[in-house]
Length: 564
Image 1 (cartoon, rainbow, N blue to C red):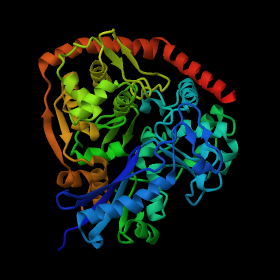
Image 2 (spheres, rainbow, N blue to C red; image 1 turned 135 degrees about the vertical axis):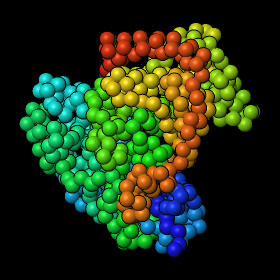
Image 3 (cartoon, rainbow, N blue to C red; image 1 turned 45 degrees about the vertical axis):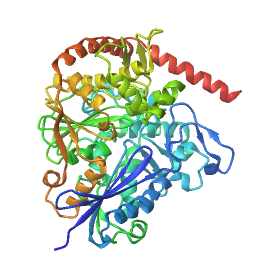
Image 4 (cartoon, rainbow, N blue to C red; image 1 turned 60 degrees about the vertical axis):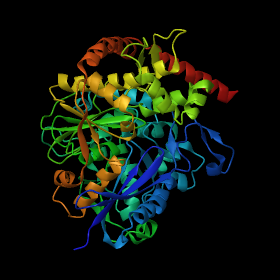
């Protein structure tokens, strides 16, 4: 019998990547990446899209163009198959994953509104996960849910994020009512791309639960927030769920449908093969890292970090992004938490704060700015720089759930050097992860191992810092394409090659266990720095509105500039 293969496609923030995987052992035989031509629209709608002058976007917006996602299917998938050197006829399944919460406003047939004659209207485009302009709507959702003691609120740690479906949907409703009325489906991009592939719109259980407030409470059938609650939130918004959101929900690892003739032409794959129900890039990575047992927390570290883990206990963890029955693995409670900015922060620093002399020294040494700063920072003892930073440059996802918060570096003097600040930012993200781990432990959800995936695993200093700060053995996903591998694992289950995801993960997943171990001396030194971090965390995150006031001042100034 010839080998069978599956294809996993991972949609990230700036690109989509495809991997061809052998079903029998998880070997990755070919990969390809396609950069989104329009990247992230966070300052303007380009004239090339609107047919008019470039339209400026307000602060905190982050949009994307859905056609860029289709191009991944047309380019990266055929290129990965060609690189693998296999016969496309031997591909038996296709799986995808996406950043979340990334929302596509659509017509009934799945046509995005920006392709339906509304290219000049910002709300017609995809709202990327890091679109944070719906924070005022999120604040109101939270206040009203707390006032009414809505039963679903504790399942999300007591706070709903501005990144999620309801906050972004309410922003659309209030800021462009005409476009909201024209919209017929408010669709997670994870489900939209599957719809493009198989012609079937199926909501995946993962995003429906974590981002769409769909919960099974007290043993009852799953439900969304009630019409009465939504109407109390905004007059006319009461029908949001039944008219724009509710749809058939598919479980992870199930087939959503079969690859259409059109999508087969795009990808070069056989028409009629199963397409797995959509999934989230973070959650799909857990099986790729063979991290499906209770006590294993997976940190998927890229531009942001998402923390996911499965458990056999149901608890309410303050500030978590959600706990969903079957949200990661069927039969287990799946927990999610996260940090809104990690790699983005390091990238911002090297792009804006690297002196010319450092850039020249890096080039002379044949190093990237990140490699150069990492080498210099690695020579320091813990605490030598005298700094502590807050990792809130993109707001705080867990445990404060407030995207009005902002970054901070404390302790700078005239002797502070770029590598000092760079190391403090690395450490700040590790401290943020420790806050999350301790919140889970305090809620009696044990965390015994940290499993790291994503591009940042290539930085050994960062990995060792995380092991030392958390005092946990740190295992590393042994794959360059973790989410895509995870999607391929789900494709193999959807194709019937394995009975369930854990069985497929055991055969196809890849991990280097305990690749980094904590050093007790460094861990003790970090305990002292972490204490300072916690003081700043609670002061700026809980006791003062300073950062929110600064954001308001900035918005006011930008609005005045636009009106001038």
